[in-house]
Length: 196
Image (cartoon, rainbow, N blue to C red; front, side, top):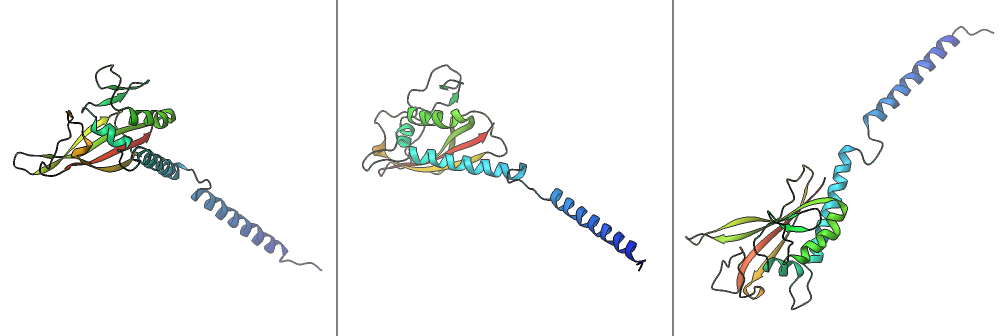
């Protein structure tokens, strides 16, 4: 017995297999097979940086009852100068003087961010009073290491300062906005992190 339709069935099978193979190739090319492609790797890095920044603030802002945190101590002793990373340590911008009153923050940033090659800026925003008694925000850089990249992450911490937090000889830029009470000012400290 001889089947004349066998060649037709064979051609249909080859055509169907070719179409299936082309669909599989197209599907593989159209979708990502790895979890760290260019689009998802930046999200992964940003999540790591955000967690690291929050951990840094958690460590710095921790304090036992009746004690000030390391973050508050450094901020209340800050002289208003801007610091940069010189490659070996934090120095006052425009000089070779090593920081002396910002040791808690700079030691932790040096031990974590600098050792991992993570660029960072630290800014503080606080309220200032105009002569007409209205307040406005003032932003001052504390540590500046360049302009952040497009995938930079900003982590912030708010600190409420009381008159009792300051030394009587304080001459820094943060001003007392309420002379009638113990409230001194409220700060928003921002840490900007990015990979170079």
